[in-house]
Image 1: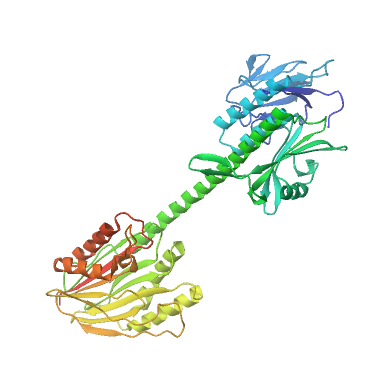
Image 2: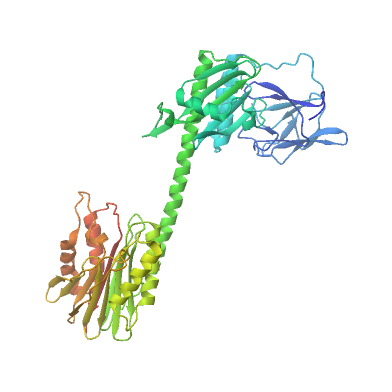
Length: 525
């Protein structure tokens, strides 16, 4: 602390307020950033605008490369000495002015101008800050300063709910100095308890501490572009505007009370807009992550299919609005045998997509020339149970076909594949068995059938058969079969693309809850 009689700064606020603070510590930092010793509540000021230093027995003001510069007695300076009565400005009209004092002049005015003009200036300053600032704390600090000017209080706080209590978001005195929890006259827990019992303006006088004003901040709902304060129960209170006057009784006349209520609503709206902005940013980040997950899923699917020879195939997968757990793959088991799998992991989101990609690695590792289909499913079942503790499961169908046309398949709770045979018949392949990842003791039955040259086998996910239109009607297995009959004579690629187009035309732009995945196998013998 400086000794009595040391240099001081007389602060002239743009709202008309006039206060005096000791010039300490030195260097004395000035700017818009809260870490400065004097905070300029003006969004046109620079974060670090200026500083006052002591050098060679004299005080100097220095411009810190600010946006609008520094003036001394109206002249713009980079560095200039300060003499008694020197007026320091910051290059902005209707902003703060600091008067350097080595002694306090007799009769120095410390009172504010006429109350009406003071209130008007406060509201205009708030309006300017609201229109130009992107910082929630900056705007709240401006509102708090206006509330102190309107009521004549010299200390103010904005406290917000944090868990079951209240925490200080902004605390300032009339000179702009930052205040903390230990500066509160009434403890935060007492203020929090008062919110439970009353929601209106609270004013009281404590002999030892002066006058106190407390006003709850109410949750604001923004609906259909209209901003409406919701005056509900305690659960609707997001915080409190708390003011103290240690010099005398606060001005709570009718006009002051109305302005204070308006400022409280403005603060509530600012907080709600900030919450919605954070919510929107979280949503955008999640959407970016989902887009990345969808891209990774697409990259894991086969991008080349056998299009000549005795075995041909084609597959498509269209992502829904969310990331799903669909997965399909083809594996060549020697020159005369192919394996195909189509799986659907339960649930949606990134976890299901990740598990589907893990399944791809498991199938590649578990499937071999001499490994039976049921053995593969047993290994996948153990993998899922051990990794997810039964919380995730997958339906799947695993198929092998050799050059002689021997078709072998195992179905673990998945949609039944459809077999098309010339001259135009469609059959559902039998299935039995639980999804993998549900029970340790689950078993699966292997089915076999001889295929004929020209036969097509369609494996699909429930995102195909359960796609819905605007009326809530499902595409259904019947339409899958009808589409197969229409496109089968033209080959596997025509079937895969035709089925995708048919489902999309049926849904007619309605958002779907699951991915659409189709894998078509074609045997030519």
